[in-house]
Length: 411
Length: 170
Image (cartoon, rainbow over all chains, first blue to last red):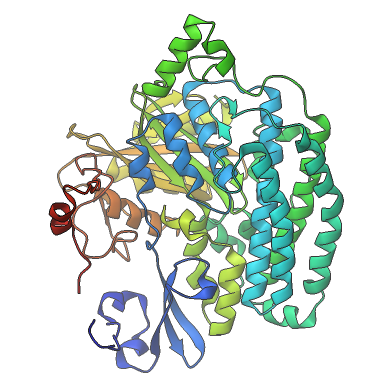
């Protein structure tokens, strides 16, 4: 290989994004990432610095672009779902939910109540596990090492529950159009109940390490302020929007999967800084746990997927005795099911905000166009506004507080 | 369809003579490219659609006129409504005026649509590619852009395929 060379980044292509002082060399341009422990994936930032103060910040994304939208166009509706797990790898079940709800809306498919309740339990557990990863890593970014270890301990319990129901810890593909893959095993209820029992105390534990810790507060209070107007204009959703004082949660505003039956509140905060986003997410942990408990108490008995055999494959046991079942099974797994020539947009509340799917069918068994409205994309776009005027060390805290997942951004 | 949404659709139809489609309680309003900024302004300022949920496009190749639809999905938090605007764009030199003056969120989404479909947004403050490398040729989400694949290498054709494989640039 050639010998090591120091490469200089030309300012030319970014002339319209930096201040004039950068062109004269008065301020310094610095490259941060894509390999950097605090960028939560492969995010590259081009920073214009005046001493240690961020004057401008230019995010550069696309390092994890895998062409999921294009690939999905080449697969049938059932097979494309497998890719949805891989988008936001902190929230696979939530991605499944967004996808299957769009498919169900497009083909007008019913979902039985037990499946709806199971979907709620699992997506809320997923929200907790995603928030735990966020809490651990963003605290680690600002040097609170022990929180990280505790958070991953609890996340492990949730992943074990996923393994119990689907056989996979992360890429579960457990939710399917028309319901879920199969019913949960008998151990499921005890496993979730155990988690509900221990988890409130664990949240207190995290809070005792952070919420009133003066070292933590020094790093987060008043940093990375986001005003209500900016948040809305930039299309921020989820905890980032709620921490800026806007009470908007799709689970409350447009209830899906029977969220209207459960009693929970939407935490908001008015300060809009890193601390506010921390508080909102920690409170969401408690609210999600409340939803899981109620859904488990109410969990109805009955089928876990739709009886509409045009879209949902028949059970294995029927294939040997029923001609129609054999035909349906064969048709569904070779050709797939057709969807009408029309388009729908359906959105769910992911741990990061509004996760929307624009799905268009062309009458055949493959999606004609699928677009993922991923919340991290919009949330990252605001980073330059939040970072302006702060130190580089604070920038790390701000990136952590936005809770981005690069797989979600680059698709 | 919701009464409030119906009124908004009627306002758009009255002002811009817009065609309208309804599917599963969703309102899709067709607006021409020269009226889109005006329509977005009306929705944002008079009907409280403060959130541009997403901005994307669909390619109907080989159909040429219109080849693309640019899609604006708007949400009103106050009224809890959604409306979708669709702008048909022709295949040769597709152009739409930029919405970055109204919604900051349009900035990156328009760059993404440019990157993936080659639709230009006139007056965009930062018209670069966003997901693909800067020197990439073509626009991947167009329907005439092949999906691509990797040839499987077996023992009998390993060397032959190895020669054709692209290698990273120096």
